[in-house]
Length: 151
Image 1 (spheres, one colour):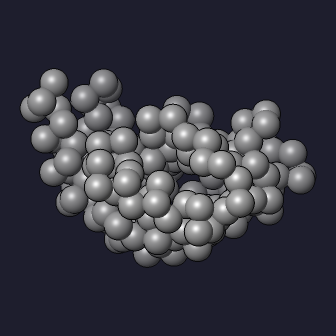
Image 2 (cartoon, rainbow, N blue to C red):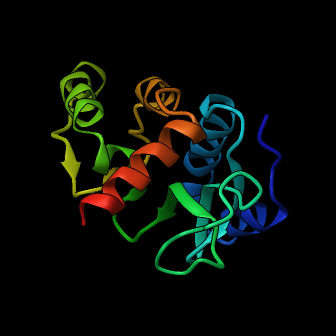
């Protein structure tokens, strides 16, 4: 089980009151759904779930002092963003998510490469829980290393 971070508590508490329930629900889904091995922290100013250095000592190639990022979320002005690095690298996972999304939301999917944008109070929590269960830290490390080799 992922241990909750006081820094993430502070991040959520600093957000507008009308967003805190959504952010807490998303955080709880991340904690319950991510396979064991990921750690909760603050990365790049937002709540992040990472592969710790104890599991992947090389760290993030852009800054090896940082653990390997996997998923993070942020409160933005007009939406809540979920950044899922695995969906950016794994085409099968991306295809699964885009096929499943309309079954869980009436809104059009608003997505960048790894960023999925949601209107407040419209988080498809069940689908996000299923997405988060799809990749272990070891799976992510293998995909990450393969992606680096292709560069």
